[in-house]
Image (cartoon, rainbow, N blue to C red):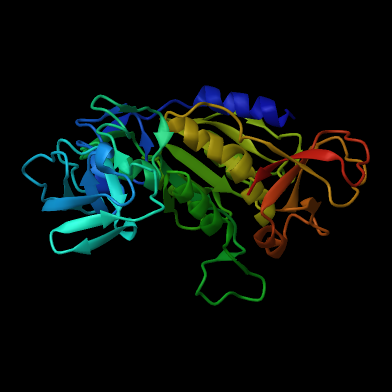
Length: 390
């Protein structure tokens, strides 16, 4: 039995980036940028107005002065000319500021009569001019690797970048195993339960950049398990759920070995999630998760998310931990690292009262996994503890 840290190190040794592809910008959201993107123009490409008002020389901008309106500048329709002393141009937000003007007097600060305006007192002293290139210049780089969010996509579009090089999305085959499982919508017998872990893990995989594929439920026979392993051969990551313990009906390890698994480790000193194994099966990384619902999802957070990130070229490192103070005391922890379902709020962190590894309602209500080191002593209210968001 190895530690969580050692298990992650072994998984990272099994994992390598999958390569890249070029996609159009409208298909890039959520993808991992694999190559720097470079701006093709300045932004803004010209000095522009930040407000609706009148563009003029700063020398003319004093209360009581009257100047002539000689034209109009709107977004997409600049004023073709320049502004001289005693003149101004009606201007709108985003429009180019004409030569000779270095100040926008907002429309609330003027009285207009025909083609003349008189500046009121007091006068807003801000110039409301956005200089050319004040956001970024041609050649500005959006650096890789990074997950592209909505703000990144908007920036890339403004940079005149229409396609980007991104990491390939890992193909993840998710295998639920067990005679007791039926798919949602089917009619279970009185001895059966609904398959849920595979759906939860598929959502987790999709959220972190993978392409999940739900495999047929593998029954507790070597023939059924071998058949489903065969269907998963083209995956980059094979995730099995259940059947990894040492009972008479736990056949996954043996069938995986006969299907080509080169196992790296088995059993991790954590709770929930002790019966976890990993290795390589052909070109794929295989991770065998425990069958209990919460155990599978906790292990998915602790192990699968970092593996998916590494496959997409992000740093091979554990989930980033955060710190919070306890809202209630905790008893001493046992010999295994414990990932407790917990709720983080503005006051701190509270471990959920029930920690049974089969309780999905508790998992759904939690938004964090509170981490207890092995043999952690009792903790009192106000102590600082570590957690990962979930």
